[in-house]
Amino acid sequence: MKIDHTLENNILFIRLEGDMIGGPETQRLMDLANTTIDDSMLLSAVDLSNVRFINSTGIGVLVSLLTKFRNRGGELILINPSEHIRKLLIITKLNAIFTIAEDDSNAVQLLKESV
Image (cartoon, rainbow, N blue to C red):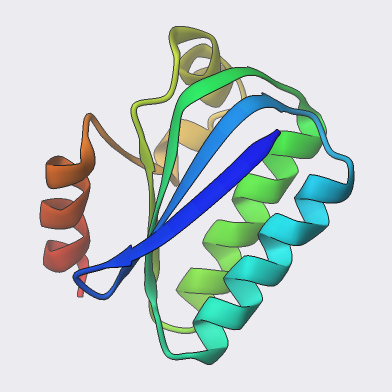
């Protein structure tokens, strides 16, 4: 899994590509979130548009990230998950806790409304 990130409008944008199935990239992603939260960045958007497959470990990482941001008074939004990931979120009932944005501008709008 490839991980890119940018900071725009006080929002951490994390762009993932490949399969989200655990491995050393998972720890790198969690470290990135911890560092950013420590720097008082409380809003994040995770772009899943280029994630082909996600397993239970990947879902667990997303839940952990959401929990980290919400515990600090922040918010995390998922951007454009594939149909496969959307179905998985519905099956696991996680669609009730994650907010989904269709693109970056929609994510910015939803995050600004959340604070």
